[in-house]
Length: 351
Image (cartoon, rainbow, N blue to C red; front, side, top):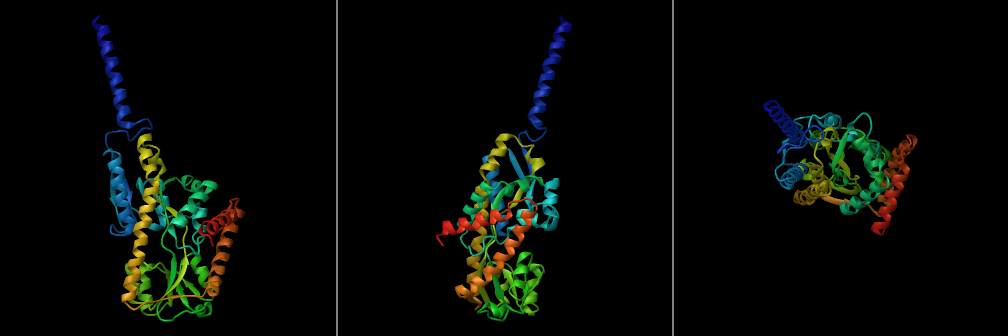
C-alpha cells in the first residue's frame, strides 16, 4: 500500500509540474507567466511626436492587459539604426519597434514604391480610409510585412512634402530649373523631372546647407520649420502637398508575436487603429506649430496656380507609375493598386 501511495504522490506531483510549466511557458513555449516582459526599439528621441504616441500606446497596452504585459523602451536608435531596422526587428533584436522597410535590401516592394501615390492629398483621414480599403482589396500590401517576419502594430502617414526655399521665390515650374534641392528616393526623381538637381543628404545637414545656400531648397513637411529649425534659414515655403501613403513603420517581431497568448494578442490587435491614429494626430499637430513659427520669422507661404501645380503632379504621377510598372514585372498588382488608390481618392474627395 505504501508503494502504491508513493507512486500516486509522484504522479500528482508530476501533473503539477507539467501544469506549472504550462503556466509559466505557455502553449507556444513562452510568455504565459504572470508578467510578459517585452522590449521596444524606438528610432526617434523620446520627445518626438512619434515616440510620445508610442509611450501613450505602451501605457494603454499595459493597462488593458491588467499589468500582464510590461514593455521596456529604448529610444533614439539605441538598439538599432534606421537603415537596418526592418532586418534587426525581424531577427528579434527587440520584440517591438520602429522600422522602415524602405531600407531593406529585399522585400517591402509596395513600401518602397508607394511613397508618393497620395499626391495632392492633405486630408489624413481621407488617405487613411482609402489606404485601409485598398489593403483589404489587395492583401499583398500586408503580406509583405509578415513574409519578412514582422507583424504591423500601426499604420500611419506623415504630413505631405512641401518645397522650402532658402532665397529664391518660385512662381512657376520654370523657376525650379537649375535649382539644387535636398531630396531622397523618388523625390529626387521629381526634382530632376522638374529640371532641378536632387541632392541626397541627411536632414540634420540640411540646415547648414540652406544657410550657406549650398542647396536652394528641401522637400520637407511644414513641421520641419520648427523641428529642424528651417524657419531660421528659408524665406519661402511652396505648397505642393506631395503626400505619402500611410505605412506600417511600427511592428512586432513575428517570432515574439507568435509566443504571445491569444488573449494578449487580441489586446494588441484591438489597438492597431488607435495607435496609428494617435501617431498621425500628434505628428500632424506639428504642422500648425511649424507654420506659426515660420510666419513669425517672416517666411512667406506661396502657392502655384492650378495649371502650374498640375505640371508638378504630372511629374510625380509619372514617377509613381514607373515604380508601379516595376512591381507589375515582378508579378505584383502595382498599377492596379495605384489606379484603385487614385480612383478612390477622386470618388471619396468629390474632386
